[in-house]
Length: 450
Image (tube, rainbow, N blue to C red):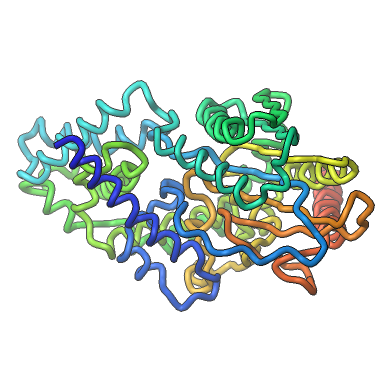
């Protein structure tokens, strides 16, 4: 029986993976709607809680003639984890417990409460911990990186890995390095997880963050979610008399957190037993996705409602990536630099660079969906950005590179005559000027305010 359940679980995960392959390779202008994707796989609506699309990778564009990969620069999010913020569990659970104390739960409501109790028992003392799924994700990413670019991992090549000081990131790093060392014991591997690197590995700019939800952004956000946050059908489903529990149940947050909890469980072994997502229709889950997508855009994207500068929170990381690459190019065999962190770094970094059109600037939140600004495509658990560098030899002055977002070739908003490859000097000049222009503007604004 146990083996049968395990087989069913992996079959469901495989189906999700195949579906995710199709949705994560969609172009920003894809005709397929977010709703149709969610109807195929509700996992897409999980946003930053979604599992990693690690199946059926497309074939890479061959390297330009005469060039070979010699260096990889990477930033990756930790893999699947347990719920980190206990509020996401406590809010709906406490509401249901209060309603139960009033004998107000329906048969369905009682079943959901039991399901929540099972989830709590599994999650308690593991808040934010990396799950076994998360370990597998990073082992798979590392293995595919070695298989796709064997020249970079040849012999005693140097693999330098760094992580934020958060345990799930450290364990994600360890999972990747374990595979690399097993596949090539000759590799020279160094790793580090220190507060010394946090200034660029997980920089959260307090000034920009403080000014993210401006009055204008708040007004637009509230207007956007107003028709999407209530769910009277759910109230009637869970409670004998919905009106009798209004003083102990907030229908908005019950709806929000129950959907989130249900979708989250696919990151754990309890996925096969999850009942919560069955409470909701595809359209209800889709409305939550719309709600979350605009929130991520305002808080981390180039949203004009707050000045469009939030992606610059990751200017230090981008400059470090550029400086590290410049240094490594001078080496005969630079190898690989791996960095392990968080989605609140990866998403604004992707927006700052403008990968796949994620530098979209607008003050109309309704435009995001139609123009393909879907945060879910960027930061599933285990998401990663890889810069793959190519040259003829160490004397080559025209180093080329390409960017892989979640292991798929991506586009940049700079000219190139060899897409999906770009000239490193063009990239370097463009983005250093972009960072410098922002810092000059910020310093000037700061001086006027003194």
